[in-house]
Image (cartoon, rainbow, N blue to C red; front, side, top):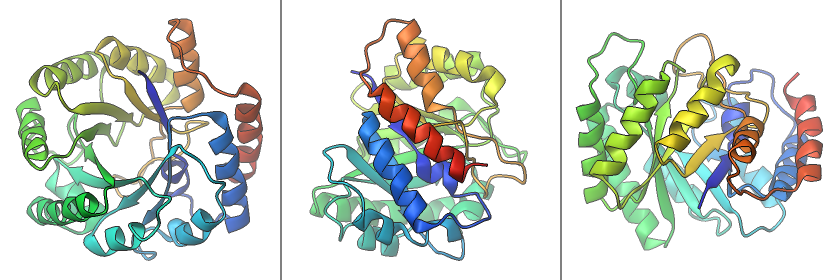
Length: 280
């Protein structure tokens, strides 16, 4: 079964101008009507690090009730503890990086410290019967001239499996993944860890996004992240943002390939119009 996750949090977090809370609520509630499998809606992180997400709790309080997965990103135990007080949040997401430099820039932790935080958060999630999603960033190399090899990725996945993390998103934070690398990486990961749900969270320029979606689908990926309009990018990765893959393009590619994924087209068009007020 194909799962499509829209990530408005990732789309909005790098914008310097604060988006009015009411407009965020309007946009997210419209996205909930589209029929995505899940919504990565907000984060419980330091407002100094990501000012745009400082109203996540306020936004959550005004979201329409839904059976869809609501994902909140956390970077430490304090954020996880706060997120877990909201019963509406079914999944917590944690950013773990293969790159030491990016782990420091993104969460102000070393990789070793991130592993310790991750174990603590996983224990909390298990205790509260919530699911943890790990976003494994810089999974196709990094811009910092640090060593990288696919075997490093497999070692991270092995440790996550030991921790009983069931869902991992292989992430390209800077948009440098090539089609062949995407195919090879997902084939390798699925072969080595067939029991894990290993999904795709890729940032990309628009001109080669479709080929990357097709490569992931051909490699058996069934969980794909996107952001409507292709907006976003991680402000901690490098100075120039590379946006998310457009959720609309993912949906259109599935349709071309006769892969069934049902959405409310009218609701999607309305969400796009509201998005234009935010991403202008």
